[in-house]
Length: 252
Image (cartoon, rainbow, N blue to C red; front, side, top):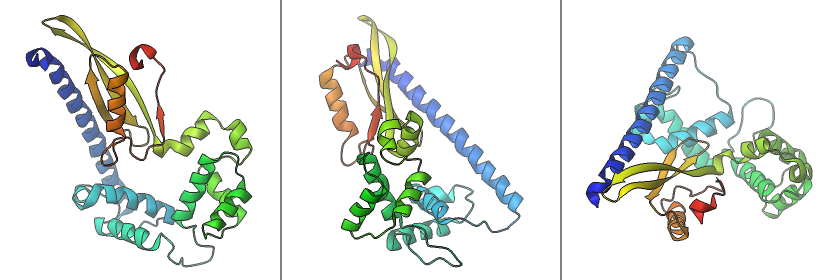
């Protein structure tokens, strides 16, 4: 049986190698693009907003020191990791220089977005009251600006007229999609169809092969679901939405 499946294993290995090569091409291009940008700057210091520092710090922490050292980052790895330490220690509430109000703490932003997504009928005042119950005092206008910045409509329009584009924009980071593709493999028993279940995280474009089987029945899909949502290393961990079709001949 192992010899019969060997051609398919080779195909999966080839597919994985092709994906890795494509990812490396993209990485090489972005590294070169950063080099060109740094040459254009000619040593001039870039100025980042608080929101940009947060986004870069979060990505830098995932890459780690070794990964950052391999890239031509616009700022040094030490600076990126220092931003992340400050983000964790102070929740990005450091004092700003110059006029204007300080940016809303990331914790409050996350709470506002979560409340709006999980309670589509809640308006600015209702979200403000819920925040007050948790000890966060903010103005309704602050709630309004946070939702507007992240493409979330106010209630009740959010409940009635939320477009697919708005929905995707609001949930892009916590959304994945899945589907099967098939591979025909010649075996001693003849031509056998193998079903390969692929998951893609829409925000990062990272792809995961969830499983390979000749019988994608209900029992098989339940086991795959348990693997994907495993609390330690499940690919769908921290994802809130999964897009799939309704092909009953496969999922049934």
